[in-house]
Image (tube, rainbow, N blue to C red; front, side, top):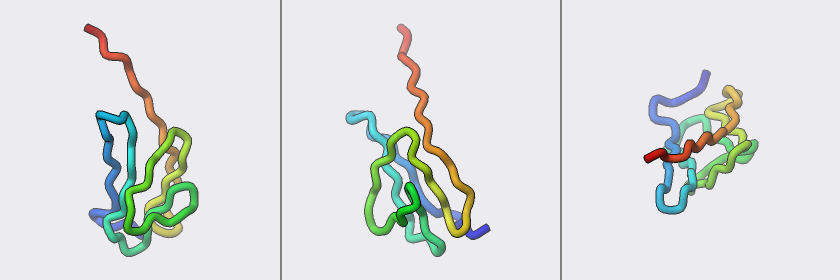
Length: 70
């Protein structure tokens, strides 16, 4: 499989409650919904597909927010 040790990062923006994926200049690419990510942070939405490398394994982005209980 063609995945780099430091391939990509997914970050959560707590203030906006959003996720973004950024490729870390990987050799074989990072793809969101079959579009290669290059030189930018791409927003992720539930149901998006993410693939690391080529051909790579396809992952589906799922968010399961649990309400905070006090």
